[in-house]
Length: 211
Image (cartoon, rainbow, N blue to C red; front, side, top):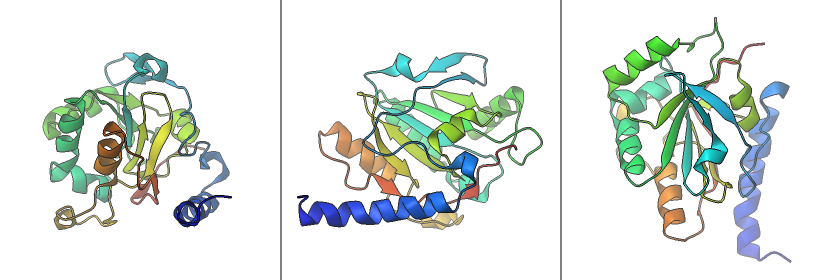
């Protein structure tokens, strides 16, 4: 029988995940859960280079779902918070993929040159930006919002999914003092500790998938 403290930790996570899935259209329901193997993928970045998850076995990988025009995303970019996180963790060997799953004709869709210009303007520093106009990668992972964060460990298992922090607002002033779940997950995992919060309900703008 599971220890009562473990059950009390798992049940709220499962309830939140079930509620989030119930609110999604069928094509976007999450196909992946924490503590299970992360789905394999191959995607092309904004410079035309191909990346496969299998190439990065042995490294931590962050997936950050992104939409330039989303106020919740802008909160973390205008403030410089997301760029600081990108630089901090890539300097420690983490592979950081920003992912854009907005479909052509939908809000948030950008071309490769437009995204590269945005990266330069915002001084963003991910490993690469994966362009996902088909929505295949987003649906594979069940990405629901921008921003939404996923952390994959060196063994290829998903160890965190959900919100970047515990302040679900577009207000820049809320970044200060927020509990950053992404930082917590990476710090705990790299220290050989279990991730205390492996799931937090994501917040932000809905991912603008095509039909």
